[in-house]
Length: 519
Image (cartoon, rainbow, N blue to C red):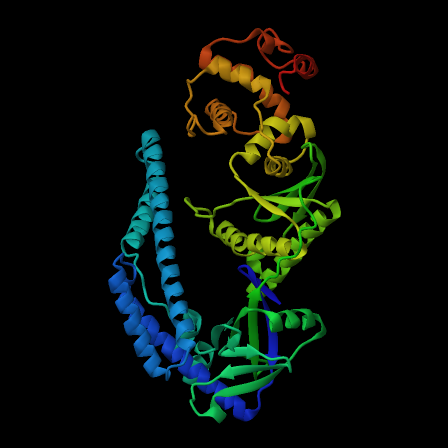
């Protein structure tokens, strides 16, 4: 079983007879030939497809539809083929747009680095490498454009060009699937692919003769699939995809049946509190809070190096780990709060980090949402801004936990509607500094003051804010004030020597506890 989107997919093994195999090969060939022709027509007229002229777009759609219907003998497979090609072209356009934005930021970063190095030493040897890299990226950026896709993947196409595989083998891998979406209309089932109650799948062919119109291919259902099989039989709508693969030298056939996940009744909600989750590319942090926002417990689930696993193994492994998150929510009898994350990458990570991030965004998040729906766990999404910083600046000293656990704690509180007020010690700091440092956020933002604190500490050279150093950095507040205002508030001299150095941590923090500056 696999999950995708808001649906789940059950895979059944087909067992066609030799005569049925020949008819299946015919469907594979015609379907994929029509798909390639339809994509070519759409790609050549992509300017019309992406234009805002509705009349021109409708004319193009009618022309392509008529041509494809003529080739495949008025078969409804055309509707699925058209939808698939349109989605494919839109995905290409989206990729091109994101790629251009990504490379623009790369170019900007390199130029900034060049300017910085030149300001220090114009003869620095690193400049030569940076200019070469800048030129290479700019050339790639200028040559970026939509290119037609290669059906059958580039890998097998290259193998065919090298002569490592035969023409027949390449065609077998290229034309490896066909699919059709069906639904019940007016009480009548109208499906090109229909799952029947006698463990057979009915597949429509391209023939018009009554005795050749359908294939009835048997398939096997194991014990674990019985529940899903019964749900498919009663589903109003599902997508069927027939695939063929060469496994251990044998050609095997599979039916991938996708249908909407039935939503379970919510049994785990936010009446008793919430579970907050902070995603990282190699682990997740969970915080369990009560309805008053108090931390009760926490848990971390680590991942292996996901980029080293193959696609199916990676998905199965992530599914196993996400099941642990679900079990934690069920055990605590609470709903789950996650960040509403956006993964439009605006700057360059290294190649390994990029792969890990891609694995996370394409698998783990969607999979977790679907599992929550199926298990009756309420899920909420909250704004992700400043969760880690608030956790560090506000709760590090109180709980002495990692930044990621504290971020998940803030996420859980945000999901229950709690507002994170600025501690008094930071308010006093901001009152001394005023508006001398302008943060990136606008004044109307709910995180404006947190942004001020962060930018002020960063401007003053205080970049490390680990849990073990929270006390030391808070004491450095006096140095920040000296940098900005040339004044030192009397209350911050407690626990300091005559030279202004840290001398007595306990005395300083005892003073803060008494005056409630930190709370």
